[in-house]
Length: 131
Image (cartoon, rainbow, N blue to C red; front, side):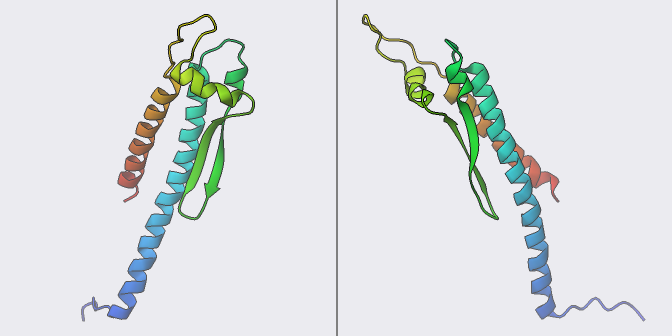
């Protein structure tokens, strides 16, 4: 006699749900790791590209995990106190003491754009390679 390929419909749904949950869990964990790596790279790259006058601003650039749940991890880039006040002035320029304005430095925006691009490409790669 041949093998019986029939499956009870009540057993199919839980098994499929289990397989989908396993697949989603693997992808979620890999994306969380990618998020941490991307945030760390963003901090490293902005430190490298930020303007250097005394070096204090560069040393205060940091990243930390803001929130983590079973489905996501959120990281925040920031500049520690008291240097955080300079971020807006460096990025957008400011008035000089004797008149005129300084030119803004796009070190932050260009690195954020690059980090977003790398993160999206990494997520696509994780999904494609997880089958």
